[in-house]
Length: 212
Ligand code: AMP
Image (cartoon, rainbow, N blue to C red):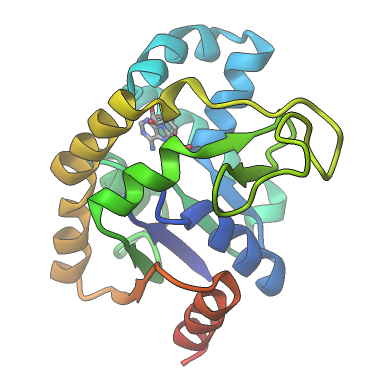
């Protein structure tokens, strides 16, 4: 199954996509995570992407498409995958159509959260370098400085500062949200899920929707 998780930054896509991927035993492919890794590793791609990501803008389509296609062509993705953060533009969606035929995907889970809640969630988000995620109010780490799971320092992502979050939200509304109509026109299965409430309940709703 080739699934897409779509929604504004801070909707909880990453958290939910990871859970569902583990449950379905397929890889969770998150282009934001891949790009952050490239920045950390100081690769050519990372050098090109770094300042764009810090501003909350989109990395150029050709770079992201090449990175994504390389990833989905690996053996572990042959039986399906969950995409988180890709496609973000029509050109990226068209690249999937070209690669896989049809709409490129089997179904999308759209996680809906309003803008005010998104800003509150993201500006309070803290992470460690191993990808563990906390929130200053909703899910604080024990001492506020070190990750409870791996002991690494936790910090605020450069692009999680309030001003950048507003830009990311505008980019989402302008370039990524239109993909909902793009996929509706192709009559792809779409499950719209309210992304507010208990995490386990939301995972349950998503799993029920996917299985139905
Ligand atoms: P995310 O972790 O999904 O919020 O992504 C963090 C940042 O990585 C985004 O704000 C973009 O700058 C960049 N990025 C991630 N995925 C894509 C994509 N599919 N196309 C362009 N830029 C992306």
